[in-house]
Image (cartoon, rainbow over all chains, first blue to last red; front, top):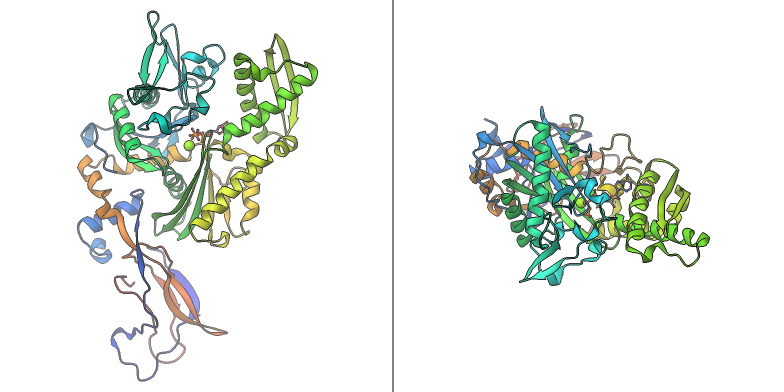
Length: 63
Length: 474
Ligand SMILES: Nc1ncnc2c1ncn2[C@@H]1O[C@H](COP(=O)(O)OP(=O)(O)OP(=O)(O)O)[C@@H](O)[C@H]1O
Ligand SMILES: [Mg+2]
């Protein structure tokens, strides 16, 4: 997705002693995911299929 | 969904999209990437799914439909869902006033006089479908000026593996390579998403496909242009034919007020006339607030003519209309969602032209939900054309691929992926403290990538983001 949403609210400050890499602080964990079938239809699916079949990430696919 | 094609080389293909219904079918191609629904030689874009034989001559579409009055036995209707089915599992109701399906050595057949003379032939539903598809392909080839070789065909979401195989085989027999079978509601979503003015947004869509013999509803998660079916429902009781029936009963009763003891429903020919004109009146009521019902020699040589206004129609059809609302509410519940979660409702299928059906559905959703039907939204596409358009768009996307490539891309190894159950987002500051701001919506296939711009913290640090494993950041 090329377009980015703009949120007008600010991010909270990190604690002053925060020193982890990339200033990234997880505040929760990802809950379970489910296996579902994406419909093999449309231009975005074709891009997905290309990434999946060539085992590429989004960034690699961009190049 | 691996479609074994007749093996046309990509360079030699001329591909179209087909919507093959029990009542009507449509064909479409793309011109400069935009879909065009093709009119057949009679000028029809909704082509009745019928074949009729008179003196060995084959008629299709509206010409065949007109023959239901005087040639019902040699006219085949509502056969499409019979493809790939056992005789025991089919409902022949809609064939009542036409050629009846029969069981011949386990396959479904029709006995019709399709030659100028000699004995009647027993023709399998597969052969009937082949003949009908051949006519569709011929109309498309005539329009395009090139022989159509291949197609993407839209099918209901509950079209089983055997039905798919039977459809592909019937197409092959008509020299038509099936590039891919796609789900009807997804074809409709694609038709809308491919419009030049469309923006790519994550949304939950309900597609209500209200047809002639069946109604199918689906809840679809659209995430970054990837579509996932969350729930589906099918109903064979409330559909367009039921609305025809309501009007048939109404006009028959009115006729009998003037002609006691003559029930036009008791004579096959009168019944056929009654049905044809009732359907035409129903369609006229989608446009005008009044419509005329007029049949020459409806029964026992008596002509019959009367008008009906839309309000009266809506009153007598109320039960059927309520059935559509229940079906839609039911499938949303099945997806464990609420009407508040639905961003968009796409009305598809011929019956969706009915203004009252659209406004009834409009009333169960909040004002923020977009309801795409001709009477509720000026930007709505023709609901009768959505599936053919979507199928044509998909055909243009994949026609340059080798069949093997298409097979591999539609393989479960590629299509089955993990979807997150809950939203992933960041904490942001609002008046009431820290608020969760979703970045990736639930039911998004992963890996996924989304970008949002958030203001930097007021003082110190660069920011705090919560992000999931296996989910790429951006
Ligand atoms: N303008 C209209 N107003 C009301 N009903 C209409 C209109 N146009 C078509 N219909 C009805 O829509 C129904 C056909 O729907 P559709 O074209 O989606 O067919 P289909 O997919 O072949 O249906 P099915 O497979 O359920 O039999 C018919 O009952 C027809 O009378
Ligand atoms: Mg249909």
